[in-house]
Amino acid sequence: MQVKIIKFLIILLFGMDEDEMKTQEFLNSLNSKDEKWVLNKNINKGYPIFSWQE
Image 1 (spheres, rainbow, N blue to C red):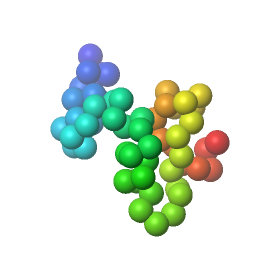
Image 2 (cartoon, rainbow, N blue to C red):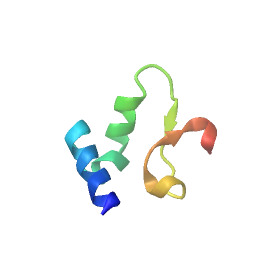
Image 3 (cartoon, one colour):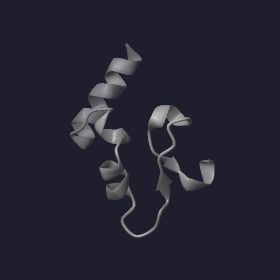
Image 4 (spheres, helix red, strand yellow):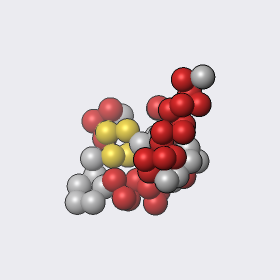
């Protein structure tokens, strides 16, 4: 139940689903000036993480 609510809130707030949030395009939108965010499919289920978390 909680997972469905979280997914709904993500779509509501960001206008995208989970697959879209795992793309390079979404990562680029997070990293406007610096590369603070990275994608690592082995960490955080493929969602962006802070670069220092790798």
